[in-house]
Structures are given as structure tokens and as C-alpha cells.
Length: 118
Image (cartoon, rainbow, N blue to C red; front, top):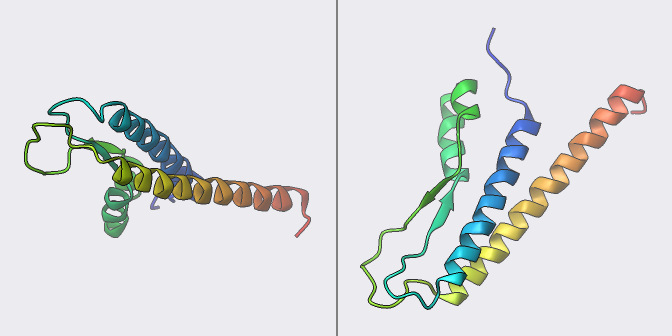
């Protein structure tokens, strides 16, 4: 029997990715004046979508967020743009809030099922 992918597992993984992304954005901003520093970003949702297309639960569960350096020419000054980072911060904040809201909703559904209060 094929193993089931639990929505709560996916949401927790998404929240961990958002947490890592927040740390990476903070590191980018901290290095805004560091000559030659290249910004980093976190890739997760794309990797998760690829794994989900396979339909293999083990492959989906094995997906981990990855820190990558987007390809761009080497910079003499920092490769970090504050506006880009603030946009990434807003986007990441929205993702985290969605994940958190879904976790809360999933939890309330489980409580209703356990207490038979549908």
C-alpha cells in the first residue's frame, strides 16, 4: 500500500523553509555593503512541486529547502539590492502566514473530528 503524504508534514516543511528563507534574507541584508558578496536565496516550493509530480511519498518527504546563489555576474560591490530583499521579505512573510493559517485550520478540523463536533 502506498504511503500517504500528510498535509501537516507538507505545511511544517513549508514553515521550516520560510524560517530558513528569513535567515537568508537577514544575512543578505547584513552583507549589503560587503564587497563581492553574492546574495543567496532559498529554493523549496519548486523542489516540492517537482517531487509531488512523481507521486512518490518518500521523494516528497525527502525534499529539503536549499540555499542557492542565483546566477549573476561577479560583483565588485555587494550583489545585494535592499529593495529586492524587502520584496523577498514581504513574499516570505505572506507564505509563512498562509502556512500557519493552514496548520491552525487543519488542527481545528482534527479537534472537531476527535470531539465529534462537525
